[in-house]
Length: 140
Image (cartoon, rainbow, N blue to C red):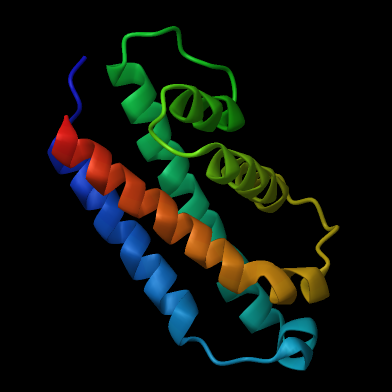
């Protein structure tokens, strides 16, 4: 199967919009810990962003004509193994997939202090993934 450039492009635009929305939010740790609306917006937008990266990764993996993997983490591992994204980003995207699972499956073990400490780096990782996908699509 060939890469659907239009599909990937639309997903990358959606990713950019979600990440930009997060970046423009103004809140501090106290706001995040006490305001459920902020909690919901940040977690939902991050979840949507990660889900979009997973969609892109699985689409690229399916275009590589190799056996599909079982989990979202596996798709990122394949991209790393194929040299499409670097190994450090593979590990961080795996953690992003874990975060997405906790959100989607309703686990209530969120440490909003940790989320506050890490969310800017997480957004940067998701942007780095998006930039890597743009570069890969342009080359192939």
